[in-house]
Every structure is written in C-alpha cells, then in structure tokens.
Image (cartoon, rainbow over all chains, first blue to last red; front, side, top):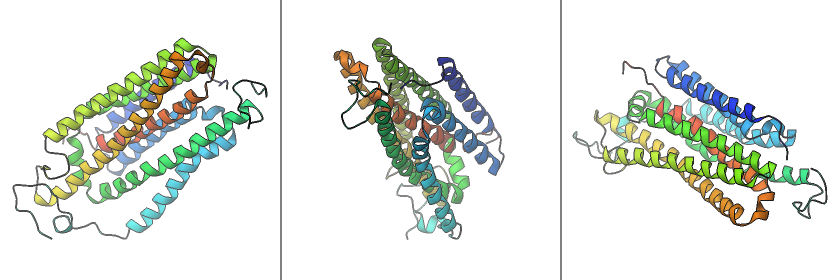
Length: 112
Length: 220
C-alpha cells in the first residue's frame, strides 16, 4: 500500500518528537503543582498522537481502522473514569500500619 | 494496487486493499488489548502517585533521568528507522529494507543494554523490591518507596519484554528476507510489526515522564 507523505514529513515528525522531549525535560525542572502533571501528560499525548498519525500511518487509513485504533484508548478511558469514581472515596492506607515494606531498615519494623 | 490477480493476494480476500485492511485492523485490535494491559499498570500508578506523592517524588529522583532521556531518543530513532523500513518494503527495495530493519534492531538492543545497566545499578543500591530493599528515610516511607520501585520494575520490565518479543519477530523477518528473495516482495509483515514497534515506543513516551520526570526542579 502506498502511503502519502514524503520522507521529509517523517523526518520533520521525528524532529518535532525530539523537540517535545526536550520541552518535557525542561518543564520538569519547574515545580508547577498539578500543572506539572498536566504539561507532562499533555506533551506525552502530543508525541503519541504524532507517532500514531504519521508513523503508524493512521493518516492514510480508513475510518474503520481509525475506530479500531481509538477503541483501546476509549475502553481504557472508561476504566480509568470508573476507577477514579471509586478511589476518590477511599483513604490511602496509613503507611506504617498496613503498607509494610519487606525490606529491612535501621528502624524496627512495624508488625501488622 | 487493488488487483485481484496479485501473487500477494490470499485466496479469501477480494483484493489487496481488503487484505491490507484485515491485517491492519487485526493488529490494531491486538494493540487495543495491549493498551488495556499497560492501562492497568498506569491506573495503579495513578492511584499510588496520588496517595504517596511526596515519597514517590523523592523515589523518582533516584532514577537516572539522563539515561532515561537517552533511551527515549534511542526509541524515537528506532521508530524512525522502522518507518524507513516500511517505506523500503513498500518500494520493493530489499537492501534498504534489510538495512533499516537492522538499524531498528540495533537501536532496540542499545535501549535494552541501557535499561539493563539501570536495573543493575538499582539492585546494587538496594532499591529492588524484596528482602534487600532499603529506603533512606523514615519507616513510614519504606512501604510507599518500595511501591514506587515495584511499579518502576513492573512497568519498564513489561515494556522491555514487549521490546524483546518485537525484536525476535524482526530478527526472524530479517533472516527470511535476507535468505529468501521472494519474501521481500510482501510488505505486509513489515507494516504489521511496524505498528507493534511504534506502539512499544508510544508506551515508553508515557512511561518516561511518569517515572523519571515527576519533579526535577533543581532545588530538590
């Protein structure tokens, strides 16, 4: 199957991916609270989008194939949504009591 | 390219286009299951990062970020060489195909070597979850810290296993194309393994910031 897009296009996509990587590393050097996560994941999503659209040739494929491509992420999004709804109302295990490390430490281990 | 008389056409398809659609849809369906597999790990990560944010941020500092960044560059280039390999396959250029596939496999090997050295260092530093784990901090931080490294090894380990599988398939394809000239005429296997390899790259694109880049501000 012949694909649209020249070698130049693919090279430019690679350059963009490397640039986005540099930006994400740079951004991590700033403590932006919740925005750090948003920026990091946003950049990762952009990189993923570029790879899927250009490198995986989704640009040239039919709607059916594109639906297959989106299916996995959609299913995951639903799962994550349900997970969030559940875990929002849970408390974290209060560290030393229930989340015991199996390793040794210089401090006496807490026993359950 | 939609002739029904091509030697590449399997008998149960009407034309090459339909054959391509079937193969591609099949691989994407498999990749959807892979998204759910890694998604489970990402989901667990999300919960614990939320609960133990401070300890996880500190634990993330222990990872070698420059090495992780180099690995990301290596994988991005390997995706590019894979794109070149698919192009060569579609153009029927056997030598270019062999060259670019070899480059992809080589870059994958570089990635695994770097990962291996990272793992070795973690084990030496007593950061491998298990009886040897030792976290420099209060007792209440031991559990959450070990949890971070459990996720680190689980996520990057599963990713590495996927890479090894992809590379084995590529080596088999490479040998087939190298020793059987006729198999170079069919670009489909290369396109399909290309999809798999790009997926593995996309996976790492998410793993790197989540594990290595939690907070790299200089004041830490």
